[in-house]
Length: 73
Image 1 (cartoon, rainbow, N blue to C red):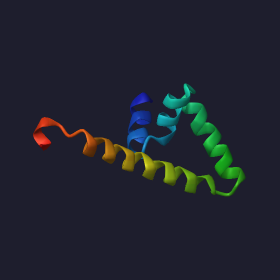
Image 2: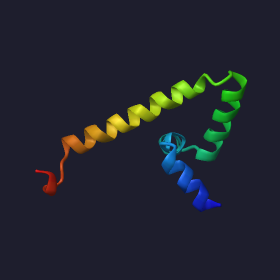
Image 3: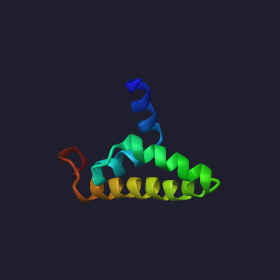
Image 4: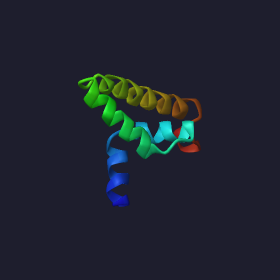
């Protein structure tokens, strides 16, 4: 079961896992509340999720660009 969970987290941007790490809150609870909110508001939190995923990718790109490794110089 953990293997499936890690696969899904890697494939679906890991937004809930990263929020859980930052907030010291279990990622499974964040996922559960996200699913509840999505069903209750007819899918509008998906837009927020995609914005957070995009922001995480841009931030990771900036970090790599600001501190290149010896092989990238």
